[in-house]
Image 1: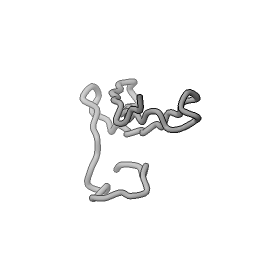
Image 2 (image 1 turned 60 degrees about the vertical axis):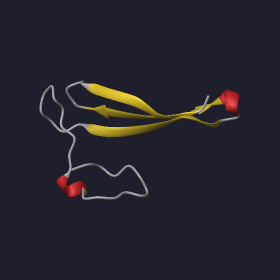
Image 3 (image 1 turned 90 degrees about the vertical axis):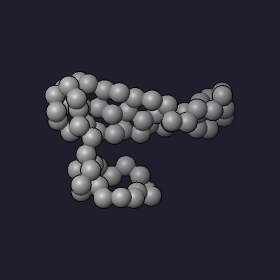
Image 4 (image 1 turned 180 degrees about the vertical axis):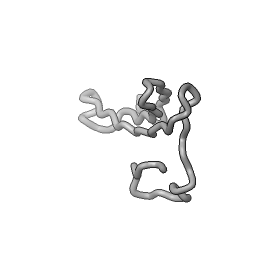
Length: 66
């Protein structure tokens, strides 16, 4: 089961999971907000990373201010 990470969730989190292809365990989706001093402390980037307890991970930027 996926842990809550947003305020506007949709769908059925009880019947959805993200599995690690390396070990077969459930992975976690971790969104991270990065703020920048050069843009007066405003949001500069949002990354979404999938992590597993075995150490396997995958991530991508889903928003990037330039």
